[in-house]
Image (cartoon, rainbow, N blue to C red):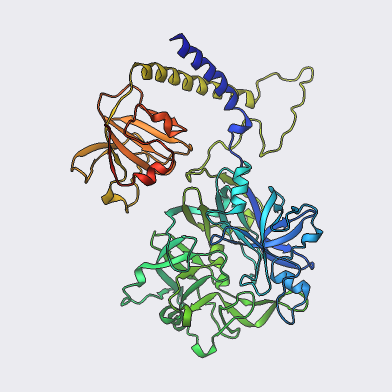
Length: 582
């Protein structure tokens, strides 16, 4: 008993120190501006503001969730006949001069250099891919996919809490009033979301959408002169109510749709003669282009998703003056005799391509992608100019929940200031940091007492398992995981293996990296940080303790003889199996 008291006291002291240490605090998000970046050659171009090398060479990157690496163009990457070096650098979103960088790694077989996120975080050694002449991607690309080198580096260095990135495009090329967008690493900007968003799991295996960011479109409606909305979907089209669309912020369009019937339906609704319509060759390459004399400013476009989220795209985001980069000077020019209509018609060999909600859609919608949780969240975006430049950043944890205590008491987003010594007559009241420290100490004391009770009760005997079933059962494997908001809730579930009804405790995904174990109602539930892995019955009555967290599955040996404890491979090897103790 005295030994247990000693351990509990030691745990209290350690918890009091560790919970107040910087290592126990989650890092705040890092916000990077999307706007005009003056690249090599001195001309501005719109993109995510990064810089490479030392001294920094500015880049305007296009974010993509369909790739993992960072793609840049070198000073020797050409753009074809008639393009000057300055104009080519503008088109490419910058030109990387490796020989001018003092921070480039010495390995000649790879390109590794310093990468800075705007004026914020720095990755001292980031791997880079160098595009060759005629590369399919005209702009430099920032890969934010499942194995993103940038996200992995930021998380490993403790600069962000999770591999989460949000994207809001702002208003730029061709817009009457430019508004900077933003890319936030490790969280999202609360000032840019409107109402309640919806969250969805990644959907792999969809054609032309390797990112897995899939939504369904319930309707697309076009505003008319009389103020009514006309749907582009025919009542006779059985597929129209469940069209699959890919979210792709790197695609320079608002919306890609099959030419027949949807683009043609929009042209008819807007009373535009099909013979007047061509394909653009400028910044919005491949989108529709029409003579500016045509009046197509009659109304907005409203996209309604299968989730119920409705996003209204103002006409000024859909129809813009024809914009292009001058191949001689690199200046961004506008041709007011033509208008770019940011709809990309899928026709010919592209007729069966997946519908895309592209870059301009995210001037009206707000996207957050969490690679750790394999989920994305979509909101309607706030476009209030008053919020520009003043983000309210919210950190997001690996399980996609908001981190409520991102910083330790007395810390200010990584900036450390030495506290001044108190002068004579100065108030000696406790600081906010001291009060917070006391509060944390009380919490640590309660945790330590719980650990003491657990140690004593665990010594008396462990509950043994009679039988374990993987979860969810096979019949529910393809359905969403049931996750009531209240972890104390329980429900009766009939497992298809033997038809027996069992009381099951369900809980939200856990944010800790270990397995979470919960004993209740003669059952034991096991979760990782995403979903429930197993449901077990107990041979003996429950111990008084109800739950605990383990960092290593081997810690469960003895109380769980049925499990072969070897880490994450347990889930794969025992998927959909009945596992009983011997």
